[in-house]
Length: 323
Image: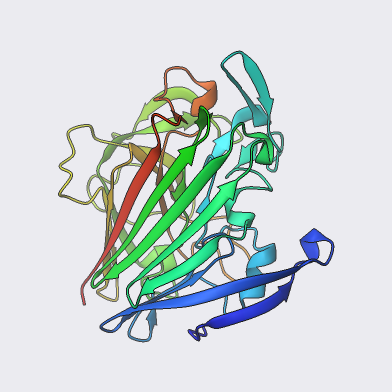
């Protein structure tokens, strides 16, 4: 992947030929570097030396038609909302369905499809912001989003905040596909997750509201194991988890490892079984901390409705090990 910092004028065929200015910046600390795009607040690349740690496209234009959400910030509500709608304060809101009858990752007008304002603060920090208008994707209320990216060897940290103008659901996820330099991807990984339960899902992958115990199943990664290409579940982190310890960890056969620290209640873990060309199934592993999927439709789930008095905040820290 080309790490050159610059601006590329790209023609967006999705918007009737309108020209988009996609900006790219690079962060550097020691021999670790990160490339960021203002389109979708995408992390285009993350390297240690010449070793690529995540999947990405060399050409920024490829992201305009990327169906896999590579490296993007997804939302306003990450994951799935059943029936592309929800009720809030006595009003039914209809969203844009983009996965069968459901809304996935905010729909076709989600944060991953928007141009953010990008500012590089230093060699090791950048900030992006986006003002989502009232009604975008069907969601109520204007929301100002801000993403702060900090590279402090050996850590890469994402801090995401959102200030809504009125009560509205918000749940953001960062969508890197971690490879840790392994061409084989998940087949070379040992995965540990501090979680005893996943959310039960229906045939469309939407949570039903029930919990599923992972004990004695292939979904139990409390003891490290190799994730299959069929893992695509939301794991609920143990309530007694020590915040100073990672909620998940990957160890690759090449000796590199990744520890994931999060302040969220759980994470979608996706072993990329449906990933297609130019990649292969299982080429990378997604660990996507966020709020509970489909929470706007399930009263028993923790609320993801935020307001002017209760702004949104999330911190995700990735620590590279074995270096």
